[in-house]
Length: 325
Image 1 (cartoon, rainbow, N blue to C red):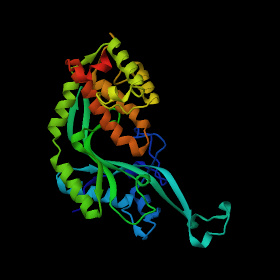
Image 2 (image 1 turned 45 degrees about the horizontal axis):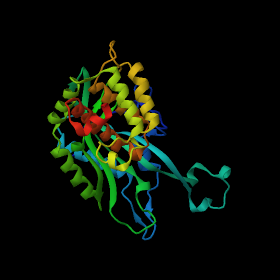
Image 3 (image 1 turned 90 degrees about the horizontal axis):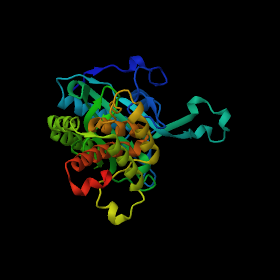
Image 4 (image 1 turned 135 degrees about the horizontal axis):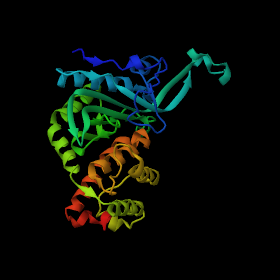
């Protein structure tokens, strides 16, 4: 099946650099590249002990395009937005004796250790607090999480289905739409597991949970208490920490949340200093854009579960009340 695609490449230069029309879904140390660049210009890593080829970034993305085209065949989708990091450089055998400054472009080889991408289905939309959310799928591949020095074994992928907030390009992902370690031995198996995840995802249920956050508020004092306790979290004794919801954000990201509580144009506090949990959630997903690719999706899901834990605390759930007490 040929996938109907809204062309994004017309706003991208030959180098694959993104235009200034919008912010990327992840920043950190990443850059945007095209699918053609991954296919034509990048080598494919192998398992060293038996020289068996890995599933490439290009094949991963192409497989997801096929799944989207099959499951959402009556809808248009965007071309994939691809971000990569940690370039691995090499050279062809003919250039083995050359110094670096003598290498010709044709004698250099590269691939990217880490790759993240999203494919948007803009015609499937929900609205939360006046923000337009479009259905989005995507994935992460990080070769640093594979043992490439061994024989070929199952390979690990991270895959999600959720929403992208058009106001800020933040991803909104729940545990129900995320597979944090999809293990496969072939492209066919990869497609089958993506089909299963996408088919089981309940779009309406996910959006209704977001809408519930819109109607719960933190006062300025409660928000300050929340961030203060968040800074203490990593230093807690394990016995206490194990009884609390996981919080995986670092100090730099918590600083960004604190700053944007005052400065973010879309999700800052109101005139009285109050802030609803939908805005709190987006402050965390916005701060998550500084994560490296291999921790990006996990931390995004953590923003969702943590915000829902705060919601439970506001309802009086004593297990989660530590962050607000």
